[in-house]
Every structure is written in structure tokens, then in C-alpha cells.
Image 1: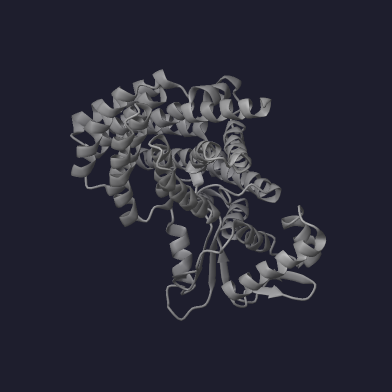
Image 2: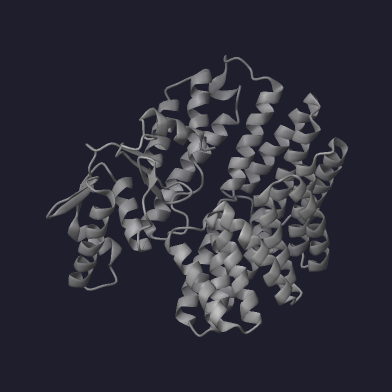
Amino acid sequence: MASIATETYNLYGWGQGECTALRISLLGRFEAYKGNVTLPVLPTQKIRSLFAYLVTHRERGHSREVLADLFWQELEAARARSNLRHALYILRQWVDGHLLIERNEVRLNKRRAYWLDVQEFEELIAESRDLNGEKRFEALRKALALYLGDFLPGFYEDWVLAEESRLRSLYQEAAETLALWPRGPFVGSPSLEESREAELKLELAKAHRHTKNMVPAYTLAEEALNLYQQTKEPIKQAQAYILMGSAQRHLGQYPKALDCYERALALGHQAEDVPTEWRVFNNLGWLEWNLQHSKQALAYYAQSLPLCHQAAEPYGEAVILNNWGIALLDLEEDQQALERFGQASRLISTLGDKELALENLSYRALAYLSLKRLSKVEQCAQRILELLQQGVGGRLTHKAHLNLWRVLNVTGHRKQARQYLEWAYENVMARAGKISDRALRESLLKGNRTNREIVEAWQKQQKR
């Protein structure tokens, strides 16, 4: 999905070492580059949020007074202004001329070359509305390729949540329009071949799953499946079934998810497709864990791991080992859980996947807590906090916040613990808010184990 960003990067010559253009990504993560060099992580999430605010609202200048009040409203005016001066000093060094920091106001310096994924995304959506046929189709596909996740995941300021909602609406508009091909605004355009249309449907289903929009993810995967059945492609059918099963599992619809996984597994066996088989076994393990059948989950992980190793997919191995450790925690096999988490961590360090590292650390902290190894708990918690401060989290943030709440609550940091539980609850309720069907919304909140644990913990906290 990152192809359009790469194309833009090359188009402006940003792959050349001497280029000083600034490249900023806020969709799905917070990243910034100068030329082909990644900029160092800013020291606090507050400063990252300030920078994101300035580039998101790039069409105008912002008074220092307003910025100080917006970002440090809990402090007295003099202290807020002092914090703003310090933050702006850091940002001045960080982007070197890409911000105009004047006596009374601050703004993005639009005379300096920059690229912002949010701006590119919005422009492609706007451009598509004036296009027809295949040109509209291509503009929308490029827009979807840029949307690697919700705006600034792990940030919870009011302005962020408002922007997240607005951009997600644009994303859904683009995805829903694309799903009409070749109908709707594409009438009169050449029809896609069935295999290409199926590929589009599957791509859209994955995009919806990535942003936790499970209802349209399921619908589009089912449409892709119907097309793949006509083109007689068993491996693609299996992929569609896996997507359908994952959507149903996240919604707490376990019998339906199980049926999808079993059909995918049968197709994988038929085609002798090892990647399909390990994915299904891993998903079946996660399904059993959700149902609190942890011994059965372990059996599925034991089948999944050697197949994944055979397929030479280290990311998959890390995921399976993490899941295996989580199931062992349920069975109070804490030392064995740590061994699995350690194996996963070694793989993750070679992959550089910070989201997976965050999940690994948060569950490892629980294992150390059960073993009363408090110094290790503190080390894990500190590293988790560092990753969250860097804006790492994405689809796993609610899990990390739940586990931090558990750890901090037991280690005596109850006020701080409550904040992380509140953020986890907000994350879950925001995802539930995307679902209009009441029964499915309730299933998401009560059927999905992690969501249920977060909601129940928050409700108990509120009663105290």
C-alpha cells in the first residue's frame, strides 16, 4: 500500500542524499524524513502533537497565545508560554527552516519543499470528484494506498479525534465508491476482468480490516470470494475466507469465524499452500484464546509455527510466538511464556516492527509481574511508555494500554494506571461507534475478549 508514497518520494528526487525536502507521514504513524534520512524521534508526544497540528493546519499562522492555551491548558499562562517556547526551540532545530517561528505566530514554511501524506490524500480525493471512469478509479486507488491507518494513532487530544473522524470519513467515501466499480460513477467505463475485480474487492477488504471497519471488510471479502469461485482460484478463495473469518472474529461472531477458517484450511490443504495453512492455524489459535480455551490454542500454535518457518516468514513466526506466550499466561505457565516472548522478541528486533514489539513488551511485563520480578516489570513498563511516547501503537494500542493499566495498578501507580485504562476504553468505544448495527456492536464489545476485559475494567473503575 505504500507505493504512492514511494512514487511521490522519487518524483521529487527525495531519494537523493543532498535533497532537503521534508517528508511527513501522519496516517497510521508519525514519521518524518529529510531527503532519505529519518529524523530523530521528538522527545515528547506533546511536541509531536504540536508539530502535527501546525502541518495539518498549514493554511494559516497560529498565535503563540492560542497554541499555549491549546496544548498546555492545564497550566497557568506563564508556564504554558514557557513550555511552548521550549517546544518551538526543539522543533526549530528538528526541521531547520521548515517552520516560520516569529514573535507572535508560528506557521509551516510553504516556500520550503515538503510532502505530507494527509495533504496528498485529501487532494487525490478532491481530484477524483472531477474525474470519471478509469481516471477516477486510479485517483481513488492512490488515495487508499496512502491511508496506512487512522490519523495519529495513540494521540487523544480533541483536535486529533476530530481530524481522525474527518479523514476516516473521506477514506470510507473513497473505499465505498471504489467498491461500486464498474457501476456508479464508473458507468460506461470498460469492465474489469473478474480476476482483477476480485483483487480490488480483496484489497479493499484488507484496507477496511486494517482500520478496524470489520463489517465492510467482511462484505467486500465475501464479494471477492464469489468472484474467485467463478475464476476457480482456490488460494485466493482461501485468502478471502481468512479475511471473512478475521472480520467475524473481531466482531465476536465465533461460530461464523470458525466456519470461514475451516473452509480456508480445506482449500489450503487442497492447494498444498503452506502460507494459507499456517495463517489458518494461527487464527484458529487466536479464536480459541478468545473463547478462553487456551490449551486448544496452544495445539494450533504448535501446528502453525513449523509451517510458518517452512514458508520463511519471520514476521509470522514472531506473531505466532507472541500469541503462544499469551496463551501460556492464561495457563499460569509464566516461565514458559517468557521463553516464547523472548524468542519472539529476538525475531522482532531483526524486523524492526515497533507495534509488534509493543505487544510483546506489554504481555512480557504481565509474565514478570506474575513471577514477582518487579525490576523487570519496571524495565518493560518504561520501554512501553517510551514507545507510546513515540506514537507507536496503531491497531495494538488498546492492548498495550490495558496491560499498562494492569501493571501500574499493581505497582502502586494508580492515578497513571487509570489514564491508560481510560484511553483503552476510548479506543474500543471509538471502534464500536463505527458499527451501526446494534447487535454487531454489542458482539464487538462483549464477544471480543480483549474489548470485554477493557469495558468491564472501566465500568468497575467508574464505580469506585
